[in-house]
Length: 297
Image (tube, rainbow, N blue to C red; front, side, top):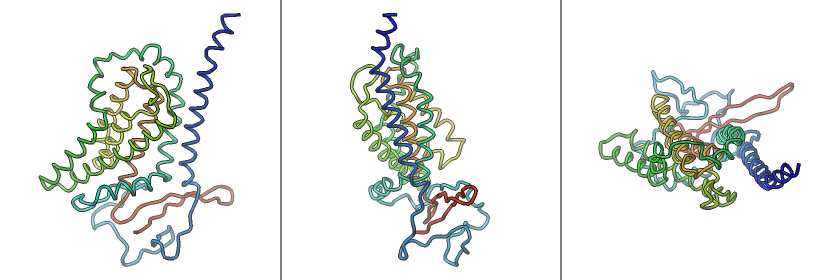
């Protein structure tokens, strides 16, 4: 009996910290979900909005002849000619657009995944998940912010040199996704201050490596589809396993890091031409309706 009492006393602080941490995760997810449940009125001098019942005008942008209507209601990559827009201005707008219904949805899914992965946190501290470190050593390098930024800059440069508009746009959006995800992740790290499994510092939650890898994977998926997206996400998972194998992150750290990376990638690739899509939920008698609105700039 004395043994079980002492065990409970030793685990009590850890239980409290875990409960507080998961509460922060759900609070973040619900806070970001707010735009999905609110509809802001459009000012009279604001952008023209085309609703579900509106008739398209002569100046409305339509898909070119022979091209199918996009099926991704959230949006697809913006075909900006040459990918030459000022990246700093685009990044500034990315922080504004990050807090959207799409971001809320992505982070909510990953928050649920993090809670499901919580039982493996203690196992990782005890044995490093028994993952061979030599097999995943390269993931600690390839998942760094500098490596992923270099990948984006190299892709952008190659696109400009060889005259590939799409390649330059991909490189530009990888850079944007890296900057957006890392600013957000580092801010959460300094706020939560979770100790790493190896006890080296208090910057464990969430994983910056996982965020960088999944930010790049998300951009590649949006431009090239699942044929490129699947191996890109597999590489992101490899980076996440590398961080756990070296006992640098808990399982919940890498799951939420991946969520921030993917949400950032979707944010920077949300525009379609000169327009964007927004999603709203409106209560109705006996239920609710989901409204998809196309807003022209």
